[in-house]
Image 1 (spheres, rainbow, N blue to C red):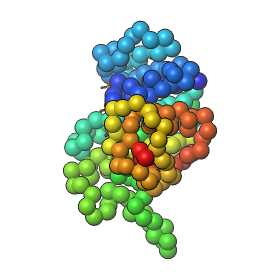
Image 2: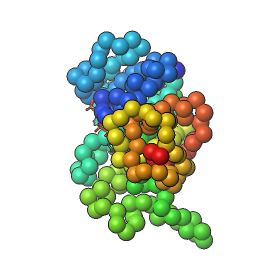
Image 3: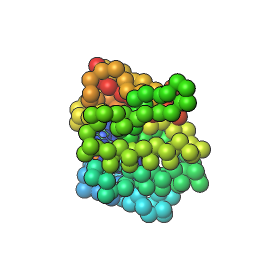
Image 4: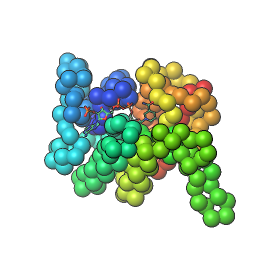
Length: 215
Ligand SMILES: NC(=O)c1ccc[n+]([C@@H]2O[C@H](COP(=O)([O-])OP(=O)(O)OC[C@H]3O[C@@H](n4cnc5c(N)ncnc54)[C@H](OP(=O)(O)O)[C@@H]3O)[C@@H](O)[C@H]2O)c1
């Protein structure tokens, strides 16, 4: 498969590149700083300097691609809208010219804490008592990104991790659709990457927010 990775130069993005290459995929790594952050020497890896808010960059990057992974980030103070507006741009580009498959990364804060049995209304994790106030802005950013995916015609999956550790895969983690997974309140970036590789093959979590947790 030829895979386009947004946020490729970030902490999780680098693990996505390693996993995708190890699984035999061709990778196009997108970001503003890919040439500064990533090796130009790896075979099957193409670096693509691009800015998420430039439509023509997204259009060019999507050419010939079979699937998209996104690990886009930004600051967490609420002033930075890269996660929501960036996802909006990616979705718009994909809806115009394909591909249909995208697996992105959000946060545990937008998983369901509770669903009302009578009216189906959802209480998200970030709306529960005790959720740290300082993470509310980034939770709302992830929520908007999720809503762009949810209202799209794409085949999406949105991985919603707790704290991500810059560590290799262990294979020891749990997943859950739309609700937090059982386990520790952290996950290795390598395990997120392996989960995404698996999901590209199996499509087990289409149109799900995925809780994921180290065991
Ligand atoms: N780290 C955690 O513990 C944690 C926990 C839960 C959820 N998450 C979520 O997981 C995602 C990935 O986290 P991370 O820590 O791996 O992120 P990160 O290291 O901060 O990397 C963010 C990436 O986004 C790219 N980016 C930002 N603005 C861009 C723009 N305007 N145009 C193009 N690319 C842009 C950056 O690339 P360039 O600089 O090359 O442009 C970078 O590769 C984030 O959404 C984060 O909120 C993280």
